[in-house]
Amino acid sequence: MSVSANIPNPGATVRPTPVPTPWPQSASLVVMGVAGCGKSLIGQLLAQQLGAEALEGDSFHPPENIARMSAGIPLTDADRAGWLAVLAQRLAEGRARGRRMVLSCSALKRRYRDSLRQGDPDLVFVCLHGERGLIEARMASRPDHFMPVSLLDSQLRDLELPQNDERAVLCDLAETPQRLVAEIVAQLGALGA
Image 1 (tube, rainbow, N blue to C red):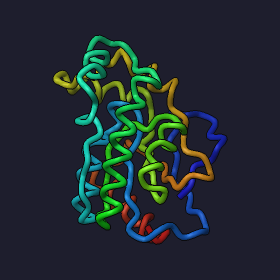
Image 2: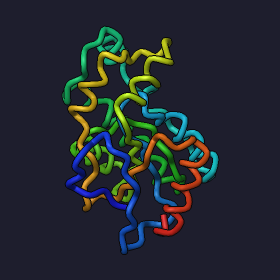
Image 3: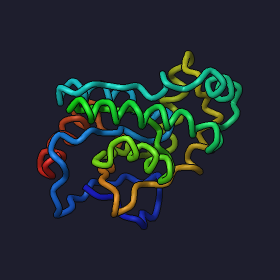
């Protein structure tokens, strides 16, 4: 599946489109998207389905990043650099062990995804995407999470959807988690990943 570089409405429902070239078999995955899109749940379910190791990107944030986000302060590229380097290292370790990984990580910008690819150049990104109202409602329903709803707009501003030259699938987060995971697994299988 590939993401069109010119999607007209970032909040519109988008269906994945297959690309003709096969992807590396058993490639590690990064489940990406803005806060509240369901990365953690889908990442866990995908890891279970694929027999892969699940990594929760949020658990690798340093305390300073958590404090900033908890205070409603968006992270800068500099704030994210060390965090992304740690995640890339974990992906590299999994690759070296021949272990398939499923990482839940926002990976909002192309340069962040490029950083993660430093750890594993064969990564496939699963981009969860959908309507702002649905994402906001999901964020509001998790009061114990450090990421406040007030940061959603900054996340949406930072979001750079994967481009045609990236191995990526774009998924409608309005689907039920079980159906979404089944669709992702089927599409990955069709593409050889």
